[in-house]
Every structure is written in C-alpha cells, then in structure tokens.
Image (tube, rainbow, N blue to C red; front, side, top):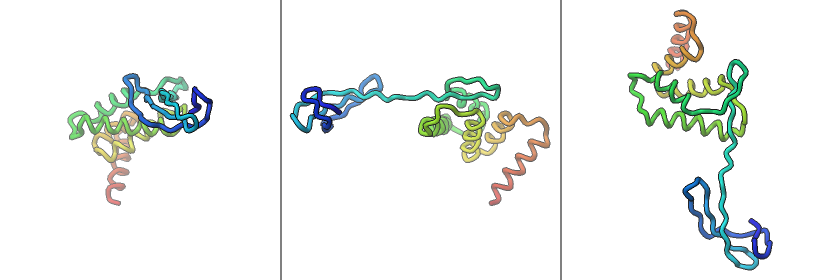
Length: 152
C-alpha cells in the first residue's frame, strides 16, 4: 500500500478490524517515514451467472438451491443446518472457481453429489425432478446405480 505522506510503496499492517459494511479497516505504518494511516478494503465479489437450459442467463441465487433441497428432504432426517452447510459449500465452490458463468447442469450435479452423501432418499427425490424421470424404468435404473455404488 502506497504511503499517502511520502509515496513509499510498502507499509506494514498494525491493526485490522471488520466494519459494519463488510469491509476491513486496516491501520498501517509506512516502512519509510513511519507515519500511520488507515485503509479500508472491500471484498470485490464477482457475480456468477447461471446459464439455464433455454440459454437465458440469471444471477446465481442460493435460495433456489435451498428451495429444491427443502422439497427433496421433506420428512427426512436432514436438519436445516445441514442444508445450509450444503448450500454454502456449493456457493463457496462456485465463487472460488473464478468462473463468471456456470450451467444449471453443473450446479445440479454438484447438488446431487453432495446430497447423495447426506441422504440417499433425498438424493433420489432430487434426481427424479432434476433429471426429469419420465417413467418407472428410469427411476429404477437410478436406484440400481445407487445400490451398486453402495456395495463398493
């Protein structure tokens, strides 16, 4: 950080504190002139756009994933905290991937992978809607695949 007093390009951080508006307040000391100054750092969150099946784009909305999970986990031994953690994990992976666009297929696969480990019945419920199972045969194939993976 460039010193506002002498222009020296390096300083050391003396104190850091979060502020109310999601920024970080830092007290710094110039390594050259020893003057102290304050800086505020703001997290620059790049929005992730979701490419839907019809080709349209919309901003990622964690609430849509949560709504689908709540329906899939209805009357299952899955807590709201577990669902929140699952959604936070997916959101974090998307933000850390540095992608600016992600498809609904990628998101759906992430959800199914994590939900399978959490609760298999909820996973099958989610998969049946997400993959648009058309008949009992498709449903049975998914169950057989799940059963086969559990034997491993």
